[in-house]
Image 1: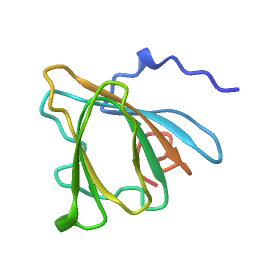
Image 2: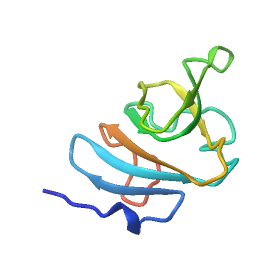
Image 3: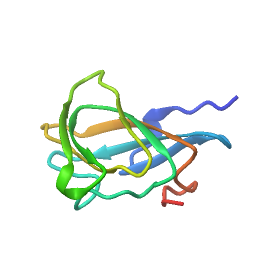
Image 4: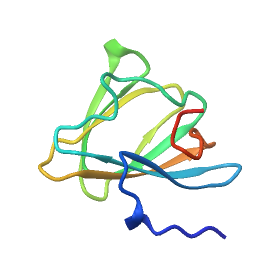
Length: 112
């Protein structure tokens, strides 16, 4: 069993817990903040399941990205090898909960 209190994490990206097969993390973006400067793919071998409010750009190629507004309680699945960028479109910090299957980051949050 692994238990994490998510309120103690305050960085832009924090790994909460991991097993051999999956990883949980939180990402916090300030108002107007983005996950990357442009849509990219930092974890080509993992799916990312994300929940939070904001805007996502996702697709297989930069010229063919889909855009979706994310609301409270929404779940977005970013499949392996999909380019993606998450943007905070609100006035408060955007905190997302992310699952990676298999794990995509080391214990310090750097991509594997």
